Image 1 (cartoon, rainbow, N blue to C red):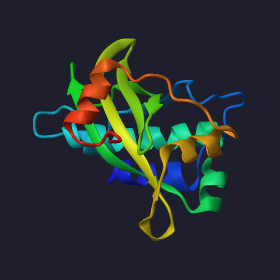
Image 2: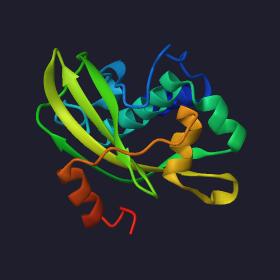
Image 3: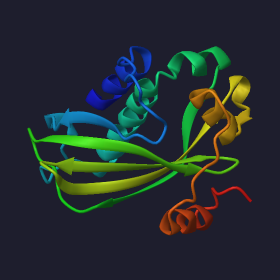
Image 4: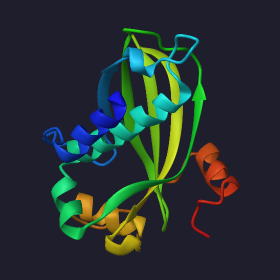
Amino acid sequence: MTRTLQLALATYRPRKAVPGQGLFDPSVTRMRVWPTDLDLYRHVNNGVYLQCMDVGRSNFLADLGSFTALNEKHWYPVVAAQTIKYRRSLTLGQRFELTTTVLGWDARVVYLEQSFSRNGEHVARGVVAGRFLGRGGERVAAPDVVALITGAPVESPALPDDVAAWARAVDVAAR
């Protein structure tokens, strides 16, 4: 419940835009592990990582100052697919950072990397294929979202090979 409230705040009362923040600049969200984040083994539950990633993506959009433009179009983000690999555990009270970075996009989705770290040490890495929907649930092309956020059409960089292979494997990549 704690992360759901945090996401609501990040979405409906977003933090201020970061002056000069670009689409490919990393967005950092700092958090702490709360008792409600823990599972029976006393480390962060795997589902909580995904909730933290939701918060990080909202903060990424806020850092870009894009909420107003997205809201005017009635466009909102949804997750089409995601994967995560855990390397270390997070436990009660630990502070950690979640860094969100755009990797690229195709005609359908935007690909993001979301990396968790604690004291500079890698904890977990998530890859997200996100898309945007409009009023009535109509799909919005990823290049249109990027153009809205950046103010002009931008060409996507090539996706890392592992991300491109994953996107094809989970059938989320543009055909």
